[in-house]
Length: 80
Image 1 (cartoon, rainbow, N blue to C red):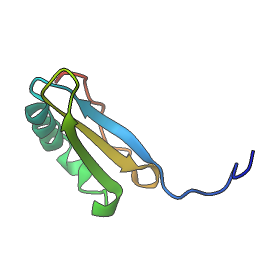
Image 2: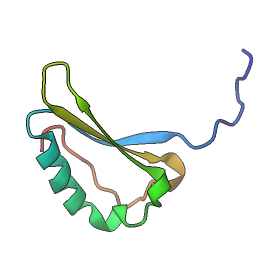
Image 3: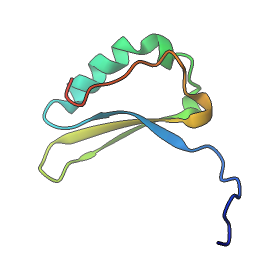
Image 4: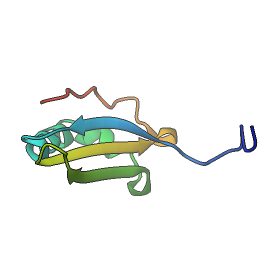
């Protein structure tokens, strides 16, 4: 297939996802708990995405470029 195996740069990995209700609060708790690990991530490698869920309410997704994933980053729960 054309373009296969071409380097495409860094790929963001989903490291946390929070759905409504309470997504913003859950994201805040997760960010506080993971502050040490997140301090290792360069700002340009971190993406925080906010949006409206189809059922209403705010969702939050956190992605980090795979080259900058800190090994000390802990797991996240779906509805923390």
